[in-house]
Image 1 (tube, rainbow, N blue to C red):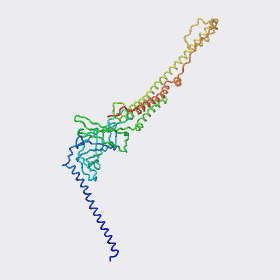
Image 2 (cartoon, helix red, strand yellow; image 1 turned 90 degrees about the horizontal axis):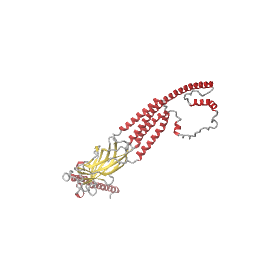
Image 3 (cartoon, rainbow, N blue to C red; image 1 turned 90 degrees about the vertical axis):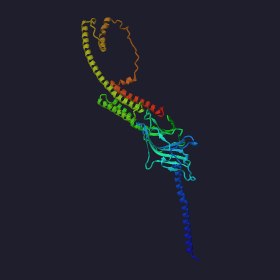
Image 4 (cartoon, rainbow, N blue to C red; image 1 turned 45 degrees about the vertical axis):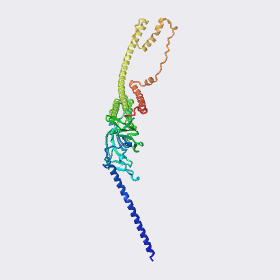
Length: 480
């Protein structure tokens, strides 16, 4: 009888042989299927795109083998590199996709095992002759390999996808710069096939996609609008698609770089109103420096913008600020002229006072001599009439001659006469004139008035400017 150890070893050997047979059977079953699957893909490509069965020069037929070929298009905006105001263009990188059906490319999907076939050469199948109408420059991406593919589906559907970088023209309306919105277009049209042979349509679902991390330095992509723009020429009507990209300019950059510095320069120019009118070098240097700085700021702003025939919002701001700075310089010229005029007037007043004082002394001496002569003669009639004198001298003369007149007249009508009284209404006091009267010279009054007038006018200008350009809607949506 065999031992127990021999029986166990035989059982183990039998299990090992069974496992080896099962593994060999699975290998024999799977290897031919996988090899046949890849071989079948190659055979399908050779069959449907072979020169004997397919001619890429002939466009695919439309629905029911009649009508134009219909191509559905969708794009994905991957990046917007630059938006140039000077050149009026923008650079964009997109993933461009086209979908159409070509019944000549149908094949058996082997019961769902083949979802689609992938090609990397566009020369193998028919392609729509689409071009970008407002393109300036463009290129494909070939690192590491060309960034494109073609997928052929079992029902004859074709998907073409490629990554493109484009520089496109974007006519801009800069009347509200830098508080504006710009509408840039992406135009796609057929070059050779008319609408009788080829029609472009937007994809029904998400015709335009935007990457989530899209970032622009000075703009924000507010929205996009898809539309059609078929064009008619002498050679026929051509299908065209359009997408309008609405960019809103970021105002914070221009507020810090343009508006605040200009406002500060205007305020600095007002410092001269508080300086002494005799500090000519300080006031002249301050006015000239702020004027030159404002002119330089205006030139630097204009260098970043294209020369246009209309007035921009930034032109209004810089122009008014430059006017205020120039007005402050002219104000000092007026103050200087008024100061010299005041000094000249003071000299004339002093000279007149000296002449008046000398005249009073001479006539006072003549009056005393006449009174002495009259006292010696004993009467006043026959005294020569004195020349015109100031009011104070006339009062003195009347006071001294009153007893003589009353004595010779015998008190005629002295007690019966009533004094003539005239009651005049007190003139109304003007608060502004009363306040300005505190400043004796005209030059000082001009400085004081300028300290109040310039800030008030500038504040009213700011209210009008910002209410006009911030809260007024743009009449034109932008260039079409």
